[in-house]
Amino acid sequence: MKVMQFKSFFQGVLFVAAAFLWSCSGSTGTTEVVIISTNDIHAQIDKFPRFATFVRQQRAVHPNLLLVDAGDRFSGNVYVDNAVERGRPMVVLMNELGYDLATFGNHEFDYGQMELRKRIEEMNFPVICANMQAEESVLGQPQGYYMLEKAGIRFGFVSMIEIDGRNRIPATNPAHLENISFRHFSEVVDEHRDLKGECDVFLALTHLGYTTDSVLAVSMPELDVIIGGHSHTLLREPKVVNDVLITQTGSYLNYAGVTTLKFKGKRLVDKSFEVVKLDTVGAPDAEMAEMVKGFCNRPEFMEKVGETSKGLKYKEDVASMVTDAMCKVAGCDFVFYNKGGVRLNSIPAGNITKEMVYRIEPFSNYIVTHVLTLKEMKELILNRFNGIKNPEKRGVDLFVSEGRYTILKDKEGKGVDVVFVDRNGKKLKDESKKYKVGLSNYVNSTYEFAGKRGGTNTGIMIVDAIVDFLKMQKNVDYNKKRAFVEKR
Image 1: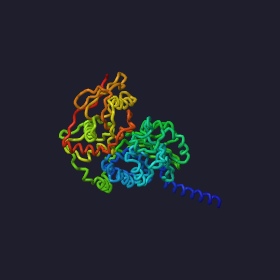
Image 2: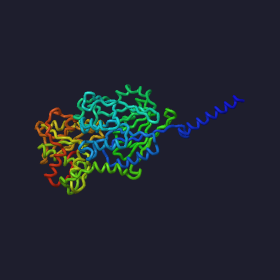
Image 3: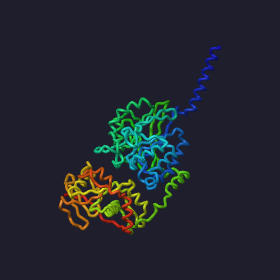
Image 4: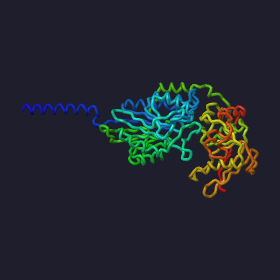
């Protein structure tokens, strides 16, 4: 009888203990961790007040929450890129929101290594990258991976950045990468497979682009989730490759990513992803709005430096103003400026301010001059044109000042010649004649052409050239194309 009473008592104790544990872990017996992700914010600090509202809403519902960024935090906002301490407003706002982890994007290097190092030292979260070697650089070597714990679950993150197949560096000014080298992401996969055994869930935080993330998922099946960036791809639904969940949230902080991971014990049993449009989440956070307002209180940026009576409606119109400014201030015969370097696609009729000029060229590039023959100028243009593998995607990449040119292509789409016309409408024929040619230091260091290793640094910042030119011209209007592609 006493044995039976003890047994009943013991069973009762076990029932109460089980009920207590069930009540602590929830009715499903699972633990849920939510990861909010951003990528390719490009310094859009005006979006942070709404993002702050969303993050705080999510933290109220999901106490087990991580906040991560997949790169390209800088380059894209005048008040960030031209802050007294370049990029610092982004760091302050990200610290305020409580980011846990970030990776490098190619635009993280746009301010140079010293500025980047200062910003990283100010961050309250680590920045990682596994395929970057920077031990001997000013920047210093980052960690390749990072482990953190949330709700008793161990999260392992590894990170990689995309590099150009030819020069094996990210898409930034090579001058900012002194003593830094990069390996292709595939070269570091094997070195990090074993991390799977050191964590409960294994994630890649990448700046590789959507297509390359899919390749990574095939070559690294140990991963559970890839949180990506670089290609500005908005995945409204996640892509699953090789049972790896791939996510990305577009760009410019229009959306936030929400990855929900569910665990039984420490075993991952479910993973899902959605994007949330941030202009639907409610009123902007007032405190963060005040912080952003403080960063944007720069009245000197509103100074009028010129005007356009008709407006510059297309990117090539804006580029024509840029190249004419470089040509005039540096005293060149021709100037070439890359399409990707023009970050403002149009300017409305009215005043042109310093803010607009900074938005056109946020990279602090300067003018480099060369003495090139007509043959060498053709080489510069054709090398870039034919360097694009898909013939259907080949087009004008270099805008020109003080003349115009036409790329002639054959029936296969390969550029075979360039016809130049000078400022007076005269066709250039003497391929040995030399011209003073101006380039941005980015084009000078990344495009292939004869004499690339030479050149003269004029010390003239492109934004200063534009401001000086506008003050001289008073009014600028452009509405004619200068660069063409035709079949031969």
